[in-house]
Length: 292
Image (cartoon, rainbow, N blue to C red; front, side, top):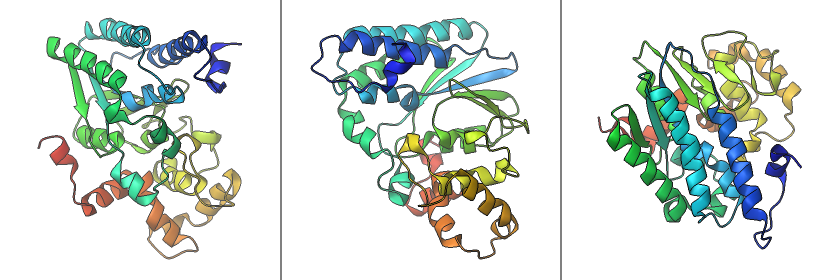
């Protein structure tokens, strides 16, 4: 059985050999994410720690010092390779649930959150301490706690006035909706440049017109398995694309259509502007998280 197949395996915590298998899977996943060629025009790399650690949530007991060493080693190797080039590396994470996502859709990442309570995980705390130690030794390394904001919203805010390119390492589909010209995304499979018209789309949605504008609507309606979000019942890929393309003028013009109310409710899950508006309505600001 290959490492990729082992990711899909349902582990029993009582199997003695599980830890060795799990360490191998972790190494495979992280090596795949961090084995990425970074063009010389990229000046900053954001590493979504929650996404990088998501595979851990399949394992109920992760107090594993050997695994900690393995993970730290893979990430440190990436850092050593790129810091000498003057690259800024920003570890971005949250120990809290994204308040917007859990207000709009309470079952967002429900099973994952039930498996591991981030604030009480000693393993994750130790890993974050390692990152903090790196940042104290090198001005090009930063660690940013997004608290109850989704990290994609924070990155969009940080990048709004930047002129140089950056790269985000994350498997979370919410990051696909940043849609900022200086930002690229790598999820371990696809390299997504938001200023390139023929970039990869989820489900290979070549028929989705103007994906910059309508991808958040697609994900809100279609659903997102990775984030345990079901979307609208009965709306598969084809029906979702057809509906959005048929109603795109009404959608952009804010004219009522059959599913206007659904989009009004669910769009903050993916659309950055709607997400920040909802975040503000809940009494928070991204500026306060960034200390501004």
